[in-house]
Image (cartoon, rainbow, N blue to C red; front, side, top):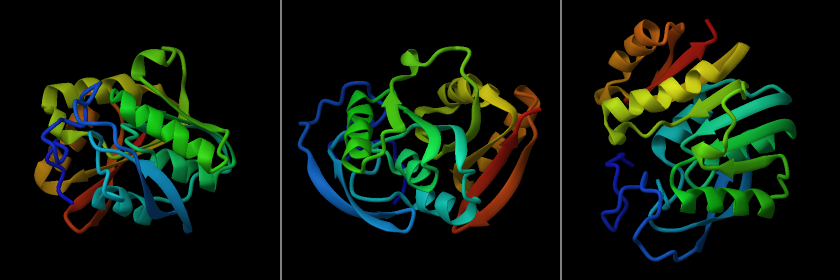
Length: 207
């Protein structure tokens, strides 16, 4: 799937309140090696299944530690947050998304899977002083460079000492220039962790 930034109806998935009808439907998908059923809806990112970039992120990154405070930036219906929760039952997992439908879906999916340690909120509900041991993200590149930089400037500096972030970005959508920007603007070490099917996985560490 190519990230066009729009849903099938033409809405942007990074709209706070999508105009499309909120028609929920079940989706069978494999997360953390388990076949599960989740709920999806129009007006969010990748409602048809697991996005290719997210699947590559899962294939390439090491398993998360068993505990800690983890963050999924741009959670959509919750594949990353749910996977972190399934792999690390003693972690505190938070998904953030400006799309209120995405936040609701992630919370409903976490509850349906019995993941009481996974929750999702809009960005304004997160305290400024919260630090994270691990960030996984398929960031919304299509929001535009300035908005993307603002997004990453908000969340990446919240890595705790010793913390790590893994970002999956299409190579032809500027993964290499984003890597350089993270290093120069944020002053954070950023390495090319993996390359797979036209995607880069970037590894960012606390400076």
